[in-house]
Length: 208
Image (cartoon, rainbow, N blue to C red):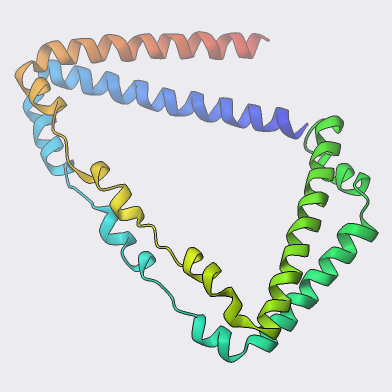
């Protein structure tokens, strides 16, 4: 039921987005055919470059919590130890896998649900055994985690990775400005085809 509902929502969303795009493209094509100067004036006002790199700058500032961890390492270690022990108790003794399969079975097929339940249970057990070891090290000798800290404290900048995406590329505008009528005709015909296909799909879906 949930899968069918999601499919219906995705399909309806696609239809409305495509319908809006088709109508917009048809109007834009007609405007390019008869009032291209108006389209170019609107385009100049809308071509405002907004950089996401500046917005992401505060998110990339590192937050240092090492001093607090070393200062309160016993309290933090005991908290991690208690949480890991409780999760291990629940995952290993209370939940045997079928219970989680029943929960996942409400969303996917029962075979997949059982596999997800067992996989999640095994993952929780392994992860919390590792958490027990880390908690014991934090309580007894936190300095032993220095190599792990050096490895984990590596910083990856999303701003550097997305720098190429932030470069404006004005490739289409000169072509449209040089051939407004041809571009308008192509856009209008393509948008009209999209609207006809959507109308047929909507009619068939309604009939079915």
